[in-house]
Length: 199
Image (cartoon, rainbow, N blue to C red; front, side, top):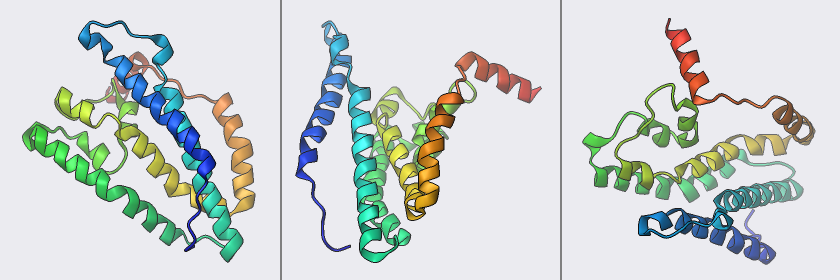
């Protein structure tokens, strides 16, 4: 697909999502300056959800356009476009952060970030040590979880869109499964499960 697709109507939504995240992060740091926080400005979750929704819509739209134009999806080219768009800056920033904090101060959970699974790390909180390093290092890679979610979405989504029947079933049954079978394990339960496994 050589023709670039641009949807200017989405710029407003992008702006709202970006400002929501920015204002929320500013709000979260107000206590450092002895200023009161405002619950009304705690909008990061909404902003990130909007970004995820936009990203999912745009990727799906492009994939459907490719099917309309070529009759199929070139998954290899799709992966290469995603890799070239995200990986260089992803790893460049990660390398800089590691060197700034000192390689000797980096703990093994940094592997979650190297293999683009930073969002998986929180699943093991309270079960195993998941701290990647100093407080500064943790803060500097704190936003990487969202990149992990996006990359994992890109890994399987083109295969589903390529098969409309499977995609339809997924869109129907996954929300039902997610709603009826929520996986909720708190830290105390996780630690208890881990100790039982060890014994």
